[in-house]
Length: 254
Image (tube, rainbow, N blue to C red; front, side):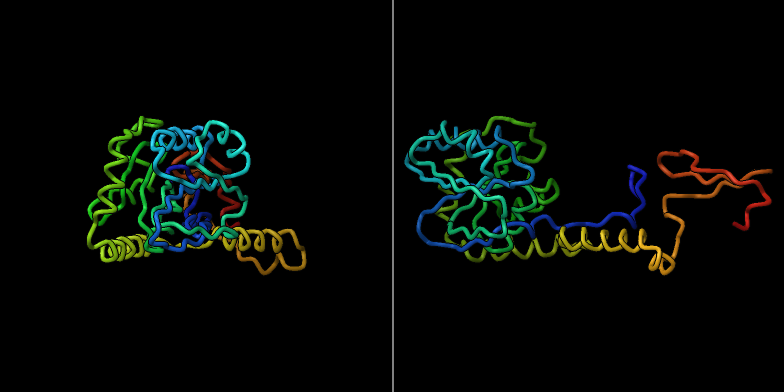
C-alpha cells in the first residue's frame, strides 16, 4: 500500500526505458541529445541549445518532438541540428556520446553508450561506475540534490567531454555501467507500459461484459481494513482514513 492510499495490486512498475530508441555506437565524433518525448520541456531543450551555442566546435544533433523543435530551433547556431519524431521506437541513432535525462538513460547505458546526464536538476555528468548508483536513485534527473532549472556550468561540461575522450578503459567501464543498470532493474516487477495498459483494458472489458463478468473474483483491496464496533462495522481506507461504508451487525455475513 502506498502513501497515496492506492492499493499495491492496482499499480505496477513500468519500465519507461523500454520506450527509448535504439542506439548504434560509432567511433566517429557524434554527439546527440535525446529529449525524453513524454517528459521534456522546451525550456530544458533550450538549455541544451544555449550550452552548445557556446561550444561552437562541437556538432550536436537534438532528437525531440516537433512541437519543441519548432520552438527552439530558431535560437540555435549552425553546429546544432534537429530531428523530430513522435514515436521513439521508430528512431535509430548513431552516436559516440549521448546526452539525456530520465528513465531513457537506463536504456542507453544498457546499450553500452557513453552517457552524459543533463536534466531539469542540472548536470549529473558522465555516467561511470563511481556515480551511477547515485544517479539511478534519482532516476537520472540531473545532479543529485540539485535545484530545479539550476545553471549547468559550461566549463565542467567541457571537462566531462575531455575526461570521457581520454578514458583508456572505456569498454570495460561501459560494461560495468550496463551491469549496474541490469542489477537495479531486477528489483522491480517491470512491465512494458503498453502491455500494462492492455492488461488493464482487458480486465475492464471483462467487467462491463455481462457474459464474462461472473468469472471475475472479487477481493478486498489491500489498503482497506475493517473496523468492528459494538453495533456497526465500518470499512475504512488506510492512509486516507476515510470510511467507505458501514454495516449493521445483522449484515456482517455480506
